[in-house]
Amino acid sequence: MYQVNDAHSGEEVFENIRQTLKAGRPASAGTYSDKDRYKDVKIYANHNYAILDTGNDPKDNKPYLLLRNPWGREEPDYRGENDGKNDGIFKITLEDFLQYFSTYSVVTQSRQR
Image (cartoon, rainbow, N blue to C red; front, side, top):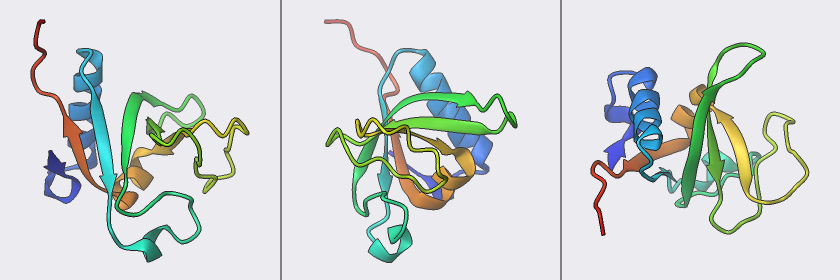
C-alpha cells in the first residue's frame, strides 16, 4: 500500500499502477475518511475501489484510471460523463484521482498455484 501524497509525482503513481495492471496483477485505491471532500461527487469516503485499467484520453491525451466501486453501482457524475449503466465503473482523470484518493495498493509479485 502506498500513500498518494508520498509519491514524487502523479506520473509516478500512474506508472506504478499502469505497470502493475500490465503485468496482470490487481490494484485498488482508497479514499480519505473526510466525507466533506466528496460532498457533490458520488465518491465514497473511507472506501476502496478496484483499479481496472489506465489510459490516455483521446480528446486531450490526459492520463486517466478506470475504477470500479465493488458495490457494483454508484459511479460518480462529477464531470458529466456518467455512462448511464450504474455498474460502478467510471473513468477518473489522474488529476482528480490524486485529489480524491489517499492510498493505492498494488500486488508486487505474482504467485503460481
